[in-house]
Length: 87
Image 1 (cartoon, rainbow, N blue to C red):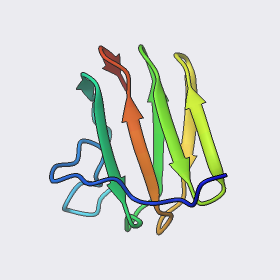
Image 2 (tube, rainbow, N blue to C red):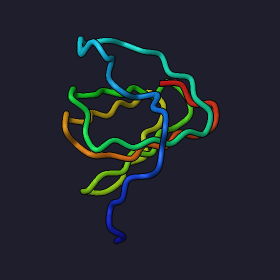
Image 3 (cartoon, rainbow, N blue to C red):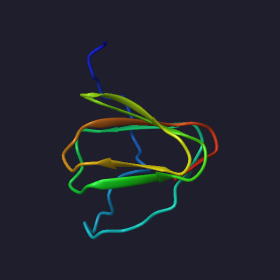
Image 4 (tube, helix red, strand yellow):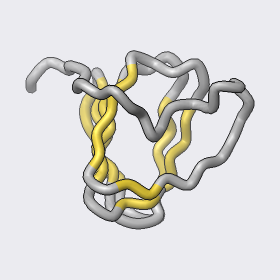
């Protein structure tokens, strides 16, 4: 098993709303990747189409359509989406 390392990213599609209020966003992405050292709010991601690969210090998970993942606040992660992914 290789050690967990954050991927380089300048922009984020899955960052919490700057107001720090709970919110819902529809994200339509192509092949995308981003990292976080940990966000201030918990995150739930529902995959509507395509797939999402999430990697953290404990391992990796592939999330397929009609499945959801919970990412706790302050948890570091890498997130990659397949082409034509909707979450």
